[in-house]
Length: 416
Image (cartoon, rainbow, N blue to C red):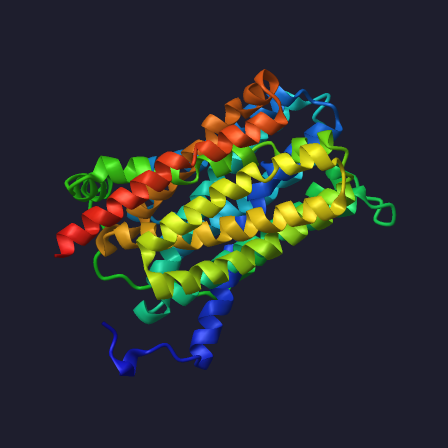
């Protein structure tokens, strides 16, 4: 328990730290949709088949495999700047160059080249996530970690708002005159936000760091997998957002098939959706505070399942903006609430001695459904239809909800 003397206070130093954490969160979030939803929207507009768009989810597999090289980020520094700052700057410069390259191609004539560049972007983006998460944990005082995680998430979501909602909306508007190639070229320069923040922040001082590569590679995994029910916990982490991830993989293609315009997608589905997710994060945080982690996981998991099924409404209404707004608001508020509970649960599992590697492991497992199984989502749509696809994805949430109930009971028994 924190003493009253250590309660968070909004000092000048706190505001400064949170400002930089927000900028680094922005840098982490910027590439995500540029090889995800925004790229898929571009491909859909160019007439790329739905199966191919579904397979493109696999370019993001690095987000699910980053635990494999996270120990290297923990063990080595690339320059005299230090472990954290050197890796952050290296990944940010690499992403800037790769996004410039991506802007030079077109999905119709250069699909393989764009796929290769997207895989590289995914690798450097996921590596940036590893080091930014570790930096946040080491840079912030203990009593600012919760607040810092929220501000980092807000920075991440604002970057997604710009690279997804605003970007797609501007391409679809008549007054902006933007093409997707120009959009990607412009957005590449926003990586400068992270570079400037990395230059200005101090390198955190850590007394105990891995002294050998073997220690960095083995001890974090050894400590975690010696815990009771470690594999069951991993399966829960994998399954909790599986249905949500599967349905989200082809939402842009779904909107195009339902005859929504790029402006509708950009300013209603993306912009309003991300604002709704921020609201959901706040509500989820309040429920966490009042009801605890496991109740929040069950409650938010049920809402996520219902909101996924709600997308079937658009199949019947057609391109009605009110229906899109209601559906997106429900889904993103629910998803934001689920994310708040989920991240709190993951954070509680990490050992402070191995935060970077263990956090990378857990987040990698969580993203496996989005980055691997979602590659088959196009096949699912082709085999059934959009309505049945969303109903099926909704049912995929049930194992995660059941496991949350089971883990809650196990936690209650162990505490008695």
